Amino acid sequence: MSKLLNLDDVSIPDFSEELVADNTIPHVTHSAHTRDETHTPNNVANKYTLNLPKKVKDEAIYKDKQYQQLCDLSGLDEDHLDEILRCIYSAYGQSVSDIIIPSDDVIQIRKSKVLMPLFGRTIRASEVESFIKKMYREDAVRNLKGIDSEDIDATYDVTHGDGLIRLRTNVCTYRSPAGTQGLKITFRSLPSVIPSFDTLNTPQFIRDNCMPREGLILVSGETGSGKTTLCAAILRALNEDEEYSRIIIANEHPPEFLLNSLTGPNPIYQHAIGKYDDFATFEDGLSNALRCAPEVIFSGESRNRETFLILPRIAESGHMGITTLHAGSVPGTLTRIADEIGGNQESTIRKFIMHTHLIINQWLAPKVGGGVVPIQEWLLLNHKVKEELLQMEYGSDLPLAVKKCVEKYGRTFKSAAKEALNEGAITKATYLLAINSHGGEEEVDG
Image (cartoon, helix red, strand yellow):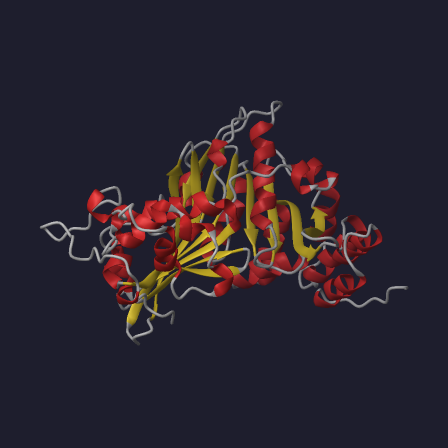
């Protein structure tokens, strides 16, 4: 744990006795808790950078006047949370990827993969609890500490000038350095710009086939494979489509993009899923969406039996549906759904074949020169493909048949990786890693 700041070692007055009479913590702009402007720059630097790792002592945050005012307070309460976040983002903007606020430990921020401790002291449990109560309801802390507690995974927005700081939040209990149950808040930066097909360099095949009048679009892949980002680009295209008017409903846990900020002719009504949000569960959100006269329903992530059971109803009722799920291939997408639902696997796969329009499986490969490039396998389930699969006798190996259809009518993961290799987008080592991790082997010349 980081060493505590000892003000006795520094020739700076101690303001700890200057709390107001009722023991409340004043706002940072109160003069009683701002620094004495007569102190020398060396003293200021010493106070706010004492005990810091050498490589971060010159960071801008420690020289920021608002940060220094926050440091001078004897304690923090709910009114200071937004000020802390604004201070961090004023110094670094989106280059800050993580902010960690643990009770009985030091606040840390991560910028360009470098950790920087803030405030030079441990943060008390009461301070962290006040932040949580501001972000959620009064009972949030009690629920987190309960026997059947679950972590809170949501978003938190802070106004900043004319803009908005968007953060994904996770709040959970943890073992504090004292060995007791503590609380920890983790903030992660969310993108502020909704991607387009052009910015993602989305293949023309996906652009041409991802906006049907009805049917399901299933986007699968591992965690962090860009599934939601691709869906956001699809939703942006739907929003901007001037040829076909549609109402779009989006349910996410938590919302990663402010989809309702798009200004196209087709409105997007966005809902957050979670205990403290618009709907408690995805199945609640989907059930509601079917009663709200949309043409398109986006379910941010399908992960349990109840949600998978509702998905076919979207297509059956004449809607277009989009969802993401964790799976490693196009046929694996269907078997993952069948495994989650349980019962007769073949009947489930047949039902989803009937109601699915397009399946995309995606993996992000490290790109030569930096960044990532999506490697995408896909299958368009048009009338010909559906007929070929659904006419098979019961008891047939449907996942194998789907795999053969991908090879015959779609695009395989191997061919997509080979294309990226030939274009110089990925290295030979990355190509071999991709192929071997997706169940295939291939030698590459050179």
